[in-house]
Image 1: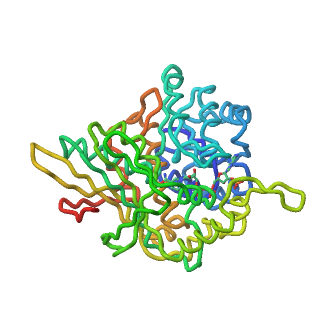
Image 2: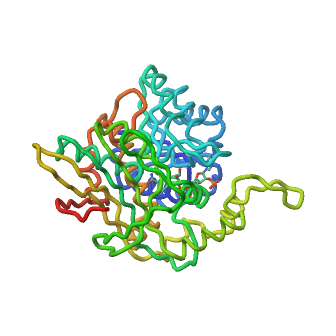
Image 3: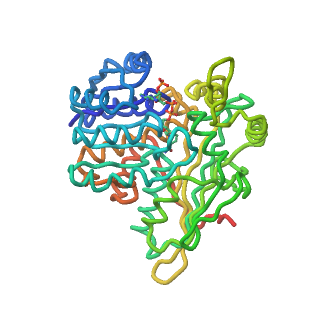
Length: 399
Ligand code: NDP
């Protein structure tokens, strides 16, 4: 079918590369391009010899001209951006200039402010429409599958969705006192920010980790979970018509929270540069350097993740509830692709989203969040490519 350019060579990229190679009918050729070429070469070495032809390249994705040169040279059908959120806009600029479809898994975040929102990327809508190219935003698990789940619930089970609770549970244990499951800098910026949820047409802000609930997750068990702001709340508030409240909860263990609090209290999570031995350093970036690399957690992580959405609303005038979720086993992921479930649950949907665009099922010029496309072919593909979903028509609700 075609060619994909994968930007980034970290934990998520590793899964995308494995999955594209498993799906060689669609991904006949891939190019892995990142800042550190040796990481791209290492991935190629692991997977070479299959039907998908793999090449690698070095690119600084902060530089539009380098990206444009690479895209013009390789001529991919789509660019899969699994670098960091800081690179979203430069990669989108390069896609515009070369008229190439685009997909990412996290929304743009400026390096110097811990703030993420879609406004910057939504501002590209008209330009992408005029160029006749598609941008799919936020196509990991959350955001990503959670948006597709919402579109599926709206299409098949509800006349009106009133409440959505997104529950992200990681019941995995890596045995370290403190480590993050994906890029530590992005992860810590996300969880140390104020929480918020959407209610009756506006945002309600909370202190970080102020709202706690306990939930008994299928196949994982009872866990503490905390309300966070999360990027899909912003797009779902716009795209699920008539919605009155959307909240996002993530589970954290007590040890993680105690470490985080201590690191925050001593200033290690700050993104304000400080002077250290004649050099400017950002404490959070230094912390990232001393923490375990998320990609190294794969062999040691045991347990399961459970991520899904609980919907409440009406069908044919009657009240209805519906829970749609996926359970993923860390060790099974490791056996299959050599990574833990957090990278796996992000990388599989990214591959599927790219396949949706390349096969024309999700091809429409403009900039879109995943819930704006037909959810059916995507959910069918999730079952086939390693993230089967389950339904519960009588779930326990979150108070
Ligand atoms: P990693 O830190 O493991 O990997 C990031 C990769 O991007 C590295 O290979 C890094 O290169 C590369 N990179 C960084 N800056 C540049 C640059 N300027 N030019 C070229 N390459 C660059 O992160 P993850 O794989 O864990 O996460 C990837 C993305 O997935 C992130 O945006 C994250 O927010 C998102 N994500 C989304 C989730 C979802 O469910 N939607 C869940 C988890 C993650 P180098 O090796 O040189 O540092």
